[in-house]
Length: 173
Image 1 (cartoon, helix red, strand yellow):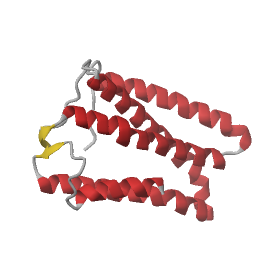
Image 2 (spheres, one colour):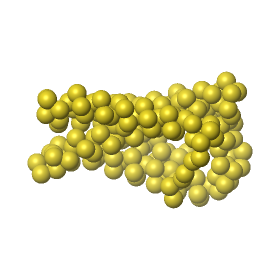
Image 3 (cartoon, one colour):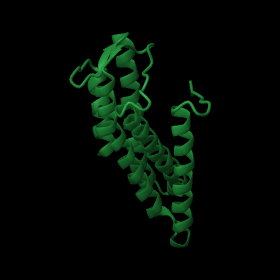
């Protein structure tokens, strides 16, 4: 249900919704496509856990997939919350891509991320962690959890340093 709610939020923008917009997109069509793809991916991610726990052969994949999703979502939230707080305080202003935005209210964008988007990712990560832990054998739970926390911490440090331009960055796609 958590993922479905966020998919609906993205779908709202995909069908032309404007409430809560942080600026004016350079291309309305591109903005709608980005949000439609985001809604579809998030909806798919919301369905995957239901399928995994109901299909007996797939259950073996739950701890691994849940570990990856928990680390990825949690790290994403931690990095972006830190960077957005630094932007709100004026330490390192967030730069959104001019290829997507014609104009942006940076403060509104930062607040929307800190108060809505990133808390969603953090809760999503915690839900994946809870699912993963439920499918890990009791003697292995501590190792599973500590490895996820270590990976989240390491990737968060890299993400923040990259976001602050202290180290290089890379982009997928």
